[in-house]
Image (cartoon, rainbow, N blue to C red; front, side, top):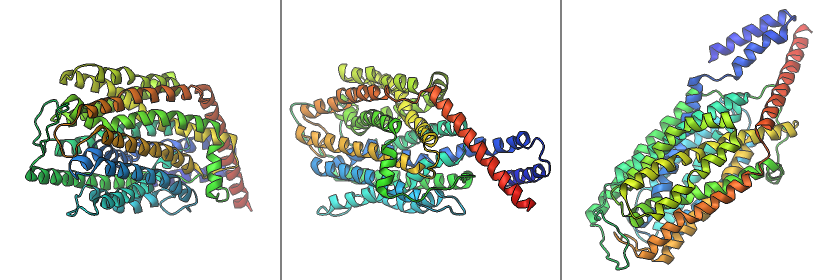
Length: 517
């Protein structure tokens, strides 16, 4: 990569001697600079895996872990899940604000945040899955380490998300890199689900039968089995921690953060000014609110699906495999959705992809418990999960570009758009997890039991079908008002390229005048 930059400088020095046809010849090195290699795209994509690996493990398994392994009361588990997610949501705009004020270093502006947060994120993640040998302060233990991990993860993910705008100034290259990233991130959810599910999934002595009944039978696991389950969760978290560090190392080695040439950062903004900056941009608000509802639907499904499979469908021994099938299906369909959105547009892809899940959400709670049908529904649902992963992150750069076109004098605040988006999504996620866990408390959930009352089964069905379906419909109706269609997106792309070209030309003229003097 350094050799390529040297060649560009050498070519530029030759061109400065011959002013004739400078624009035509200089276009090639500029295009080469904006074009990303497959290796760079892969390294960038791998950097997104830790967030999804840990996120899928926590999303699918933390609730059932707190209830059945740590054996906390559902109300206490509800507090941990809500406060942890709410804290995580608050840290996103805070970190985004701090990142936007960060100075450029030798390794970039985003990369130091990613590198410094990694060891602390790994340590706190591991301690979340450790059951302390005391009962009195268990809730405080999980609350502290869950919040600390979310803070460290935010210091990694917000700069990583904003890095999209600094790997290339070409929109096509960014879209392509985003597709690579989404492919690896969905693969990351598969990996997180597989590692956590396959290691801890079999460590239970509960019978493989329908486990919700009106006549509650309390069959508690033995102490030996519970200890083995605790050990399995620790092993799974250790494996995930190793992968986290490796992915961060690959991102650092393989991706070069580009400094915006010809553009100066505007004066640092206060937190209130930054908030007003992003909230006053109409397309951003409509995009965020639309995906807020759809993301909330999938988060409700994710947070309660393991309990739903276990207690409502009775597939206790297969729940980890069903989750794995959903994620595998999503991974395999990411390239197809990338083709679809380039062929038919991102708005059309969002309507088709996200609404695809609705009939299968209805089907899974309408039929009698059947393992084969559960697997078939999981394959179909994975297709929609892929769209829900890809589209928000593919459309956010378009909003940032639209803001740049409408505000050409404001630069260097890209991280704010990403951090506030993640803030709303995570805060809503905290509310949904807290409310759903509290709903299980009111339904009569019994901690550590192999069977649950019929009211728990009914509550889980409501949480994974009617509520998400309504949220998806509301979200898609809001996305219908999103104004950036393909025509406007392509127009913004041309305008931005013209702005970059003019700035590069003026910079070249200034340097040429300086050298001649």
